Length: 162
Image (cartoon, rainbow, N blue to C red; front, top):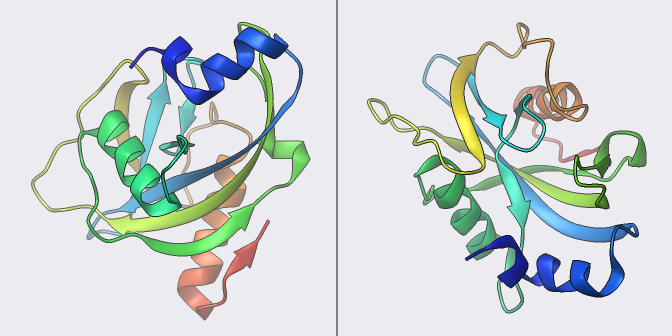
């Protein structure tokens, strides 16, 4: 599906670059060594956590699995919610094409299967595993906070609101 065929693409045809408030989800994949998977995004050229928006008629789990399959090649049968992100300081983005969005993201984590390699797509140029305390400097603004929230959740079991 092209961007212009998506729900957001159709909205953009009507409203141009005006700010959209959008629900979505991300999935922090964690390997057996405790490292997290980051993707080099094709839109901003920096590292991010795989995520996306739901399409009409999708529940959040189905939409998250679809987005993960599109971005990483892995559908993640088990998704575990760890937090909710809505801070406008890190969740409001202006894309290179001028589109503005503020996101409200349910954050999931999922174990990554040993021996499986993520698959790059039109949205994901590359992937790399990182220790949570050794992230690259060229990340999306929300990455450090999302990973810190995951670490707090892992240590306490308390759902995180950031």
